[in-house]
Amino acid sequence: MKKANVLIVDDSRSALFAVKTLLNHADIHTVTASDALQGQEALKKEQFDLVITDVDMPNLNGLDFCKWIKSNPETAHIPVIVLSSLDTDIDIENGFRVGADAYVPKRLANKELIPHIESVMDKCTFVKDKTILVVEDSKTIQMATKQGLEDAGFKVVLADDGQHALDIIDDVAPDILLTDLNMPRVDGNELCRRLFNTDKYEFLPIVVMSSLGDKSMMRRLIRDGVAAFIVKPFNVDMLVVTMEKLLSDHFQRMLEERERLIHEQKLTIGFIASLVNVLEARDKYTSGHSEAVTRFAIAIGRELGFKDQDINRLQIAASLHDIGKIGIRDNVLLKPGKLTMDEFKHIQTHTVIIQNILKPLPGMEDVLVAASSHHERWDGTGYPNGLKGEDIPLFGRIIAVADVFHALTGDRPYRDGMSSEKALQVISDGVGSHFCPTVAAAFFRYIKTLKNDNLT
Image (tube, rainbow, N blue to C red):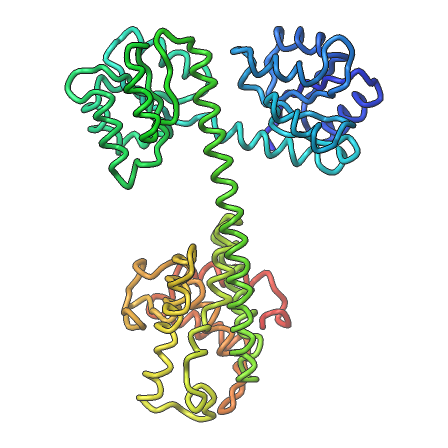
């Protein structure tokens, strides 16, 4: 977590000490204030990344203190966590009503405060360094707006009118568009209309700035989807607050959507994992194969420097790489001898069947491509699509090495498994023809870290 400067406000010396100690152990710098009035003075003198405040305090209570922070243009961007012994539903609702970003009961502070701080700081990090495309024909307003937004941490790109904005928007890829209404060539009204009618930008937050004389048009634009409007002349600090609020709301929606997708995916993967168990129960000789291939694939991914997110996707793809065999006939899948040409062609269809299984599932596109390409070969002679070299998805190339190694070392009805040394030689001999050289090299690096009894 990024080291933060946090103001803690509480009239209880023991509570101040406890929270300060908790945060310091998490490598967070802290400043303390014994009441809200001292907190106000501290905020006037120093920059803080976060305020943590009690509610029940003399002179000025924590809720009014939070309201003051959020209504002051110079401090409105600072997130506030209310930490209080008052933790009924009404208390928590009151905290959020005055603008608190989180509400943590004191009895749960040891367990929940640091995670809430991390969440709030992640949200702030998301907001900063975002790009705003400012569309304005007045150079004076352009410069004032640019200065204020850049001082708040935003990246700003300027466009002189709507047509200029349309010309550069794909290259800029803004997170928010701020536009005037009255401009030459394409005005703000037409710019909004065109963007709302495109799939790419229909959900782009747009803030319109104009004079009071455009009220009727403003109302219509809000109905059409404009996120907010600002009346000229405006306070740049309030403009910054508006931008941060829009991005914060957008970030929260993203988190909620991500959690929903993760939940759906867990259910889906759990169901498919059950299918894998059914598949391996059909053939005692391949029991545990998917688990072993997954273990090797993850090890290769780590050798290649994959981040955790990529490792997770690779893990899913590897665990499902043979799920298509659930559609292969028993007399072929379980045949104890050599397959005929027709039987081999039939078993090859498992890479197509897996596509039919995974294609309807949302968020599984990369897994589908990876799992269905593990029989492609580096020289282009593999199946199902005859892909060659780096046209083969990297996950597929990784699973190919892991799959072949474990298959060679495992017993089959018609042969005993190879020794690890012989299987490694087969992999080595196949580098540049069957296997990707980079992936094979990563696999061999991993193997060197193991003892022989851990290879299978």
